[in-house]
Length: 318
Length: 301
Image (cartoon, rainbow over the protein chains, first blue to last red):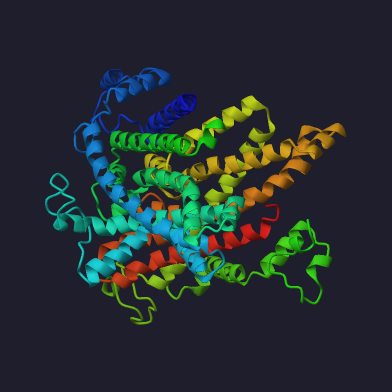
């Protein structure tokens, strides 16, 4: 067990290193000199050299990378060009808002998706299965940014029962999940965000349940006279690890992929910040946000793998 | 395998010539199953219509999609011959929707093609070549796998400064690792089989073996996976345009139209919802066709 954990963590280190290389090179993908945004337009050649030296831009690329990595590891992500605040403060503030969305969206998606998938899996080929399978295809084919707009049209523009965008007049600092006047701002983004995971989780659950139902031990359970409800309980237990793995991954996907939904609802999370940073060409914020989100994704994958090995010992031996 | 088990899915015994007695090639039996799958045929027809509408847009569109009219802004359905009304600059919405299919489909299909060629090639090389080459390719792919797809697409096209070409390049890069894994797995499975050994024993070179014995077995899974990516690619491409990272105005594009019409959500909510409906219909039809192709091709379960 410990060996497996150690191996899995060791495996994550080169990945994390590679991810930071990709994030570092993002700056060099952008058109124009990274200095252009800092330099005054009438800068002399001498001044350019001076600033280049001050920022370490006259060093070879690998050295620049290691210097950057050193800064990043100590929490120094540079300054935002737009707000002149440290990137780390901007990113962590926005991340907590995104985390609020996902921590509601994932359990919601799991509850709906798991129920739908389990029912469909228990009756493969029947009408209820077809309905769920169809709904799952709709869930994964829906552009969630469009669904968000449609929900705004229905519930904010036409019915006027929910707010369209934002986090409320008080902003994110005093947002409380225990006050309806604040929580109502969460409803539409959370529902929109949970659409794709509902589709994916119900698909996975359906497949997992149907597969377990075909195994020999189910026949044994029935043969020894166990009631159908008790049989289903065994089947659901056995299909749980697979579903949990998918749910864990969805958490990572939502943290990193909420940019479209956050843009629709102008929710002040990491995705919205990312899209603002792109518009403002605020490369330090862009780089920092992406690095943070990618690292969260790597960490989620790691945790999911470890949890799965705790639940299902067969994985450890593989 | 018993005879009934080799019956094509959905075949009946009372067909005029019992399929079980006919000897079919692989592709012929795939075609047989597709022809007898009404749902896939129906959604395939819709996909075909959407593609044809995009190709023949100049013939179909009732108005010039670029012609603006100050007095015609955000008019409702059926206003003065505009069947779906006009957009925020007074341009005919139906014409823009028809033309918009061009860039949306292009941005959906091109990245999948590039990723299939690139990822497929890398995967076959990785699966067939020795350990070191395989490790080098697959570990590099793992790094790109460590990003959520939306984030990677946004990061790359955002850093490169948007635009249609950059968007397509970013999406191609997003899909390549997954494609590479599919091809690598399929190749590695075939590599250890006896007929490869037999081919090698008859003196076939590596190129010949890959060309005649590996590719035929890898193309199937790669094609199935590629077909399932098209729907995702259309969604992501429109998403990039929605964020202002894909197609640039005034070119008509569904994602871009959704983002510009969104400003008028209180004035013309119905027009605002239309481009997204186009994205949704296209994406779900590609998805269902891909499901149909998958079940038609999956004989070796």
